[in-house]
Length: 423
Image (cartoon, rainbow, N blue to C red; front, top):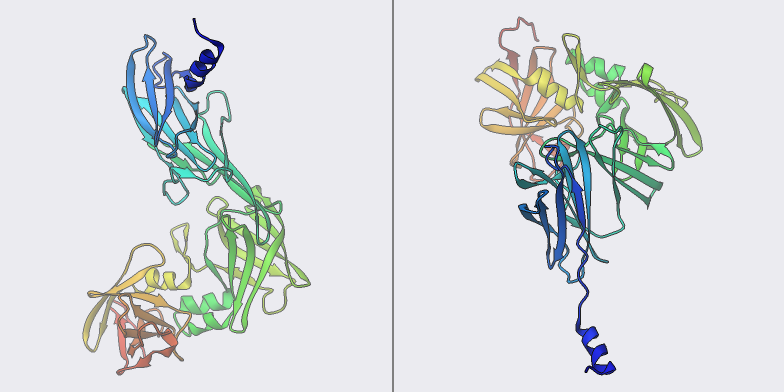
């Protein structure tokens, strides 16, 4: 016979059976339900799929915090006729690890969750940052993963909602269904570009006296969902003005947004005309800020048939629409090309340059700075649509372009195939 003391001791040595999350769903879309289980172990979660007869069909290890006691939850997210995804969450008080899986062709495949830039989200993070859930817009619609967060930032309360939609091999951020707001004001997802006055753009497109562009005010729309910033920033030679948005309204049928902004004690308005399906500011009309700023601002652009191309800056427009060509000078032919995506880099022969229009020596439209950081640059002055003057410059390593000094005479280059008369 066992004594009471012995019975208590025996019970104390018995560990409870671990909880094993289980879900049953048609995971592969074949019309038959499978059963998924997730069992935690140190540093991982054993994810297993069984068919209706209990036979193991697939098995993989999902990420988990490196701890003895890990809580695991398992969720099936329906995709419609193609089956369901499996969401595995392994958590402790210090860390949460989330992974999404698809069962197909008798195999489990990890489905990465990718942000708007296409970068996968980290496997694990500190708890409490985001709340997650799966949503469906309709009974037959595929589920989407939604994460939300509210936090205090410099300008107030930032609330974010990110939506990730299944794209076959990944869960991709969906900008149209995602959003953020600062103090209740939506922060739009707009194409980021510098905007210029009409006077400045006219000089740019004439390819003559382009320095006028720098003398005029410039505008940037700051719409940063990560930091909770929605403001207009005006830049002049005297400095800058940053005006946060205090009210926002958007009329989809007109593709137009109306803003109310404040800087100091001054309140003013801005009307934003949008292209690109409501994502690209093509014109901003400012009213009430002052004579210098109460004008129309627009991005540098070009037309390809009936399609308008918008560039992040005037420098990118010049690199794409003006410099890219074959030129001829006293020292022979010069082929100029642009490379990559904006901000473009410019290639002349084997040398690669960046184009700087902000910090230039006097009487210079822009500077081509060597991408490798060496000291040999070019100062460029445009002489109309088909001619330019380039002057070799010596620049101190790491120094500002306006501190470069000429190290030779200027050379006039003419666009090959153009008929021009340049003095």
